[in-house]
View 1 (spheres, rainbow, N blue to C red):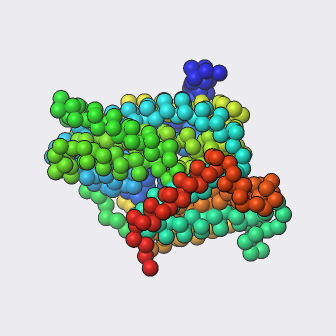
View 2: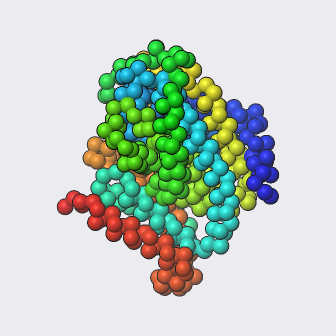
View 3: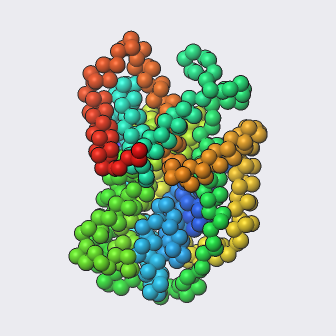
Length: 493
């Protein structure tokens, strides 16, 4: 089937009433949760992961994806109006909030919406064009190549995380250890279960994701002061209109941001956060007058937003076609697929074309929905911040616990949720990033499986990983990334 036939199949799937409803639900809730301090895209997707257990796979993935880019949209609203530095939109605060203080919040919000749409649409095109090609090429891979790719994925997740590389690698290793808890698929022997029968099937990725990101983020945000609303009541349709100078400065920045985000979204360890930072950095480096940045330069708002949204879409290429998540949100997406009994990888498009192409089509529908009513609802989203935090956060945690318990009717899952929530909060206090842990948790069992398969075929000879060209190339890139990272960063003693 050609691209047009595949897209027709996708729109036929995405435009069903059920999938349209879940697309609308995802972008709406994601937009709201993106505005709330401490509840960003990762937390939004993690918190609502249990809901997807009760809906068809396509509808569940469409809703989770809508939560993802909907939360990115919402985070920008909080960054510009309230100076709330969400993870994805941290750099938008640098110039977005000064624009709001200068009475130009409406222009900033309008242009970021246009930048978001441009980045998303280009990312969807790249996803639709590249994913089938990557999947077809990956069908020729053996366990040897997959092992090497997973090594690269883990390396990227560790070295691109913020903070010390040593701490990031320790989180990856911890995730791998947690990932092998359960019954060994080859020997049938329990490992690290400590006599708990409930752990014989392993620890649920969804439970850990909700704990590390959902519960821990809420715990870390509970003590923050309530933000002071700025400009939310004075935004009118007239104040949204940018000037000719705004358009002249914005379009080149948007195009550069789309290019940066599209490339970084394809890389292991990349994703929307790194794309947003790099988009801002590129604009500041190319600017004739860098001193404008930090004082309300519109390029410093639209470029990172375009980059982040392009990366949101293109990060699905390695996630769905190779089974390698590029960031924590993609790891949660893989968890949702695994919960449904669907194996991500090069055979996904061939075996489940309705799921893949329905998801691609839903990106276009969801982003158009966001553009249509994102700005008119800005005042509503911001006014929701008037809900007292001491009432909002406990209610959200109760909902998370109820959702986790409803999946397997297991109190042990709720206990694990709270344990990993406390662990995630403690990690943040000590400067450890939870994202590498989740990547290690998802990729660790796959890494072990492909390693053991390769060694069985080669009868225990590790040289087999250096006899195939693709494996050698990928392992070499991983090694070079490690060397450059340890030379650049000052490692703690």
